[in-house]
Image 1 (spheres, rainbow, N blue to C red):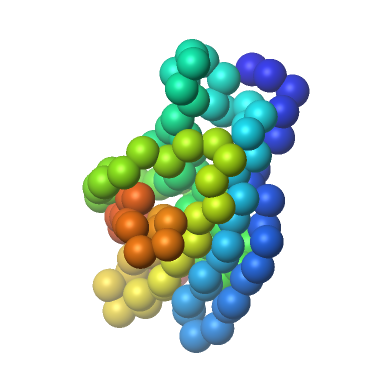
Image 2 (tube, helix red, strand yellow):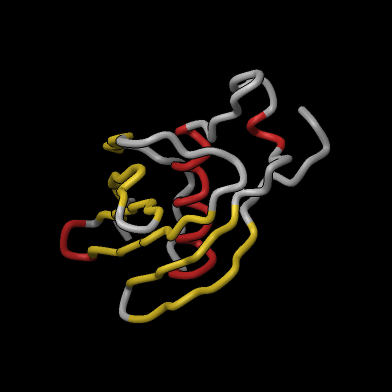
Length: 118
């Protein structure tokens, strides 16, 4: 893997009531895009899920050791150099974290992750 960054750059955040909206810039030299795919790098889906888990821990205080029982739908390709909005929502009654990556009015990907019982 290259020595490039492994996380997006947080440009702006709004957090409250179990909801976080994070504006993220995806660096052009992101390490996880190396070799995925040569000539036209794409942000891997597993990285999008990993970031949702990582950023939910940081901004919503959710402790998710691993993403299990997850559902993900990829609608548009996400590429390095993009600025996206990641919307994270904790739904306690359903023990779920939902996430959605958007670029302007386009939904790039969305999904949900089951949370462990507390």
